[in-house]
Length: 129
Picture 1: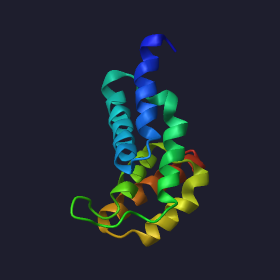
Picture 2 (picture 1 turned 90 degrees about the vertical axis):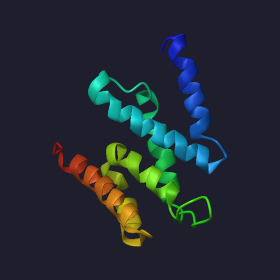
Picture 3 (picture 1 turned 135 degrees about the vertical axis):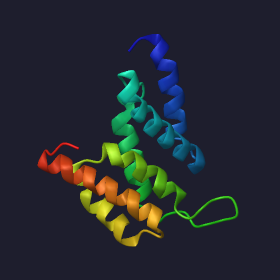
């Protein structure tokens, strides 16, 4: 990694491992946007941190979703984590994702959990998108 890449990755890592859940979710969302740009730009600049991103996302969905408040919709943390797992989920994540799918507090989270489960299943069978 050249020095010009290190600073953005360090900044992203700081967000990803923040004590502030909103910042962590922002980092997860940033990763997913960067992954989507891969299709047009030829590469995800945050790819070197994919394993860390996946682990943080799994940590979030292993806990109950945040409750609704005046500023925050119910399960916004699960939604961010599951969105990342639609690309990063691995076969060994399938059981955890299935548990989230069963207990999802709303249809939006259920739909994204279903996509993440499909990713884990596809990787388990070697099927492509």
